[in-house]
Amino acid sequence: MLELRTGLSLVAVLLGASWGRAAAAQPAAAREAGAGGEAVAGEESGGAELEAYRDLSRPPGTAARVVSTVAMGKGIRFNNPYRLQTQLGDTAESLSLTAGYLDFGAAFALGPADGVQHGAALRFSIATGGVPQESLTPSYFVAYRGFRRALGYGRLGAAILIEPDVNVGGELAVGLGYFLLAGVALSGEIVGDLFYGAATYDAAYTVYPVVSAQLGLLIDHELLP
Image (tube, rainbow, N blue to C red):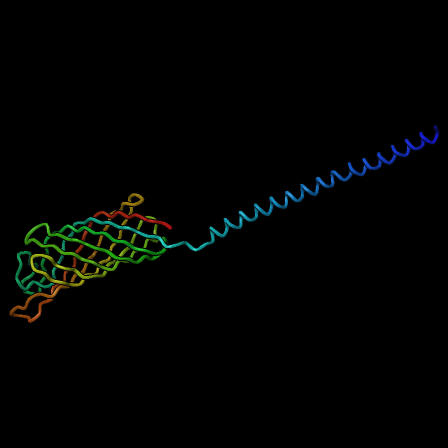
């Protein structure tokens, strides 16, 4: 009987020791599991932050700009061999005024959104008085919107007279738009044209330089990358 009690006591002691070791091991395992979870979460958070940094540090892509304009203008002709009624001087070399005109235009450009953009433009002009006259001007177009409310631009191309007589000249223009709204601006433009005309008694080849000024509205639409 004594031996049985001694055996049961020994078994109880062994079971208690085993239970104590298991209980001590459980918190350690839990701590290890928690540390592993925190490490995984930290790695995921660090990866997301790194990806966000890469997105922010990535160079901006190419943006597009679509510009449309409507304006009214009037010019000064620097040669008047036919003594037009709007002559401002007494000789053929004196200044004269051109008829007023309406100008409609559209342009498209590509480049960095905050830098210089290059593209093409097309203008159509029609006289509002005097002899019927229309011109079409395809040209190279460059634009820069470096200020919040201003867009500077320039054009260089060929001015094609459609009426009254077909003729081709060169055109150079610079303009500035000041934005009243996000995409609507007041625009001003200085335009220089050079045409060759028919011979006269004074010259075998007549040259007609014309400088015009025009004011109107500009609508700018940006297509960001």
